[in-house]
Image 1 (cartoon, rainbow, N blue to C red):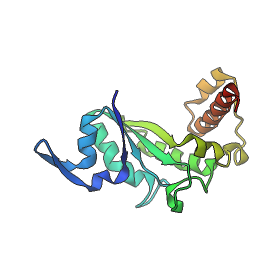
Image 2 (image 1 turned 90 degrees about the horizontal axis):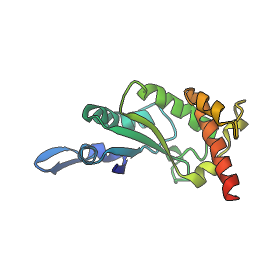
Image 3 (image 1 turned 60 degrees about the vertical axis):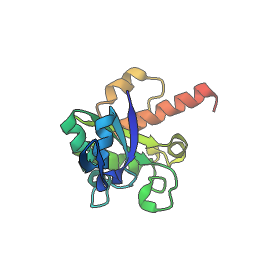
Amino acid sequence: MLVADIPFWFDTLTHTYKSQTKPLNQHVQDIVDQVVIMDYRDFAVGNDGIIYHAEDEVAYANAIGKSIIIGVETNAAGLDKVSFIEEGEAIMETELVIVEQHFSVNQAFDGFAIHDYLGYKTMAPLEKYFSLKCLGNNLLKMRNLLSEPRSRFCIARALVREVEVIMGQ
């Protein structure tokens, strides 16, 4: 499987390739199996939000029968609107649930990628803000909770901790 990361603004550039002129993101999406759109914003809704920047790429992926992952930033990035580092994990989860609900009816939407591990690891933890219980080693309960969007990040956080224990970090 060939996957490419593309910035959200590729749909604003027109390019001719093999005698076809269309947005650059579409050429890339035609060539690869899946794209991860680097949709680095810390809010879901609005003219500069995650949903707005992903609409064209998700719609095109759906039209050509391919999938797309939406990437978000968790490292300091200069502009406040680019990363969830200032807002923390709870706000990130809230915004991503909104994005997931918006795109869940679309076959092409295949979830989220978080850039990157170290940034995510140092964010203000979700359980500081919500009364969710991370389940540690109880993988059966984790699997059952995966269908509930609010639980996904708690589960991911618990798995990160388990990996850290295994790696001795």
